[in-house]
Image (cartoon, rainbow, N blue to C red; front, side, top):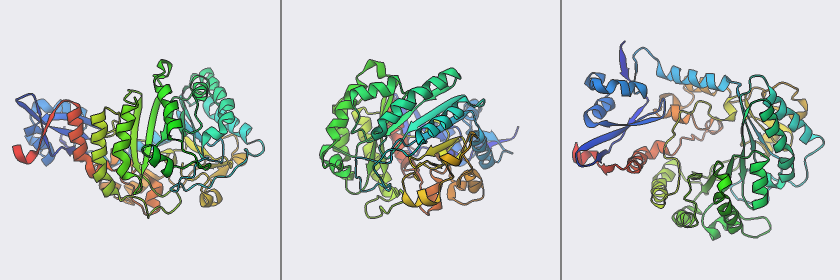
Length: 453
């Protein structure tokens, strides 16, 4: 069989030393998101695309990682076909629910419009019936039911009512159940967390902290004027210390703009000192971006963010905090917007395919796929504007077509591309620094290629 070096390969610029004699470079094969260390001649051959220079002993390893592939394969088509099959798969259901339209925070970078008041009419019953139909569908093998916002904990009674019903239905039908709570954390208590985890099936908790106490409280102010940092942290310190919650993953997300970027090192040091160096706790630092609103005065340019981000990643590494350096699996289903097996049900009753549409006034008026009251009994949402995203890539409507990282990124965000804001992930711009950190995590010492080649 005639073979070739894959187009989807990144080779480290740096050389890494293991012990006193062994020197390697890292190869990141993005078709399968596999990372392997290879000797210097093999790395040079891969980087040059010279299959004839690859030692025979390395070929099985490189084939297994999709570094070496059949020569007659159109790799872009193969990757997009894999993504299309995954997006068409009806065995996994993902439904995000907004149990309220109100949020108790007034973050300046938020594009949502929040209003007080309960859910209208028989909204809760309609949501319940729609989710239960999806769980009970013959094709369903796993279900992920997320609680999203506004601030979902303001709708805690709704979660407490519906969550156990969804868990029981999944058990009755032999469906694997997971649930993510995306919350600002200010209304969490030990008692409520226990209820959410033990009875409502919450398996992942994502909380936003935008810096150390005074920065967070300024960047994400409560509408009553009070701070929330220590309320959030004290509750979650107790949760991560609870042995019964070890299977629950807690994630701290930090939204960064020009107003809080300088405080991130102090925040990371504080969080490490507060006991969040735990295997079921991770950290994510992301740039503020437009959510139907104008944040151009405060957002960081992608390349600028990537440059400062490397320092934060190293600090997390040095502090022993858990974080993702590079994707560990290919991005086959990019997001709910690219599969009809996923949907978002707004507190207004509108059903969307994109998480950034609910409660954004223009989107609520113009971009709903259907209203819950008219959705009928069919499982799966109507076709959305980005369900053909893989076809758009194939047709060259973004530079994803030629990007080596596309299999792990999937295009990042079709909505952002459509709005003229290329959403390339930061690792596109700082991947070599990330490879150096990955090597250090494996106990390798970093040398620069120019000093040893």
